[in-house]
Image (cartoon, rainbow over all chains, first blue to last red):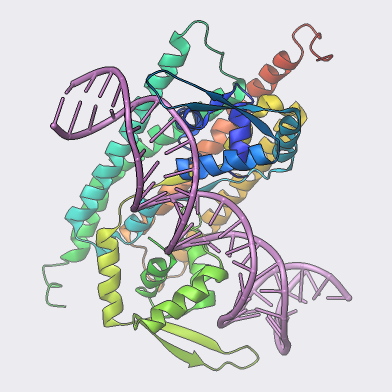
Length: 191
Length: 191
DNA sequence: CAAGACATGTAAGGGGTTACATGATTTC
DNA sequence: GAAATCATGTAACCCCTTACATGTCTTG
């Protein structure tokens, strides 16, 4: 499943510009799918070329023109086909855990810093997410969240908070074990 | 951080062939970093070209020759530099959660199947992992696990089992909500 | 006055996945 | 007899990331 399908997907909710699509990506599936302008704009151009979306230029005052994309009938069909054919994959690529795996090769101060950095990152994730959920639920007329969207959001929050708690539990013990390794009787310094 | 660094990393434990490195990747960091032969073999060739590893061809009876790679002094330095410079990133790419996000566009039977498929996958993950941990701890002389390695393994197990429990909790409610959406008074079938 | 939001794109490059190519041995 | 394990590699391709390029308006 590629960025094109994701664009079609968000356009199934309502017409949007490329810029808005990126924001929507960040709001809706930040913790399981990300894409930059460099992938979104070419994807939209491809979709338009293939007739899966139509474009309308909207002039704006005091702003650059906006190109609003709207999904077409063939677009709905393509989206449906794509969603039906897609395998439910799920991959994690974590440089952080790789670094932890090799923690015994690093100074233990650095290991502590890495854990702290990850902690801060995940805490920000959690707060931003909660903020957004409150935003959407606050607006009375806003489109109600679909059940699957709630599931995804709940999943993200659960994973991040679980990971955070685990890290906090493990940090102390890990650093103590590393210390014990690096100085078993203070005799290992000279090779 | 790329496959080259990961190869150097596992070679810091002991000399290995490309084939063994792939197995090690699968054993040690299956749930946060994967690489196929198509990335490992070229990576090893690059490392050898740059003098970060040396190769020794080992002839075998009834088997193709093996090329055993060993890390060099410059290799240790490069590994150290790489680990020091690396940012602790952590990305998830989940087609499964994208599919759940668009669950309302799918037949609810398909949604159930997707959840079941993911459940089976994660259950297998968990069992294989437990099997491997038991294997390594059973062998008395085997290299004891480094603290960071235990952390990574624990993280993986916790995440997978948490995700599994969440999915099982949410499956029923999700399907019921989708049903309610698709038939609000049995009137939505005709567009 | 700087930073960030709004707004759209291109081009190069990098890195990984997939498929192809080959072949013996062991296990079910 | 088929499938899995052991064993190494190449080549094409695809997709994404990053950097570049441009400009206004608003907010701190």
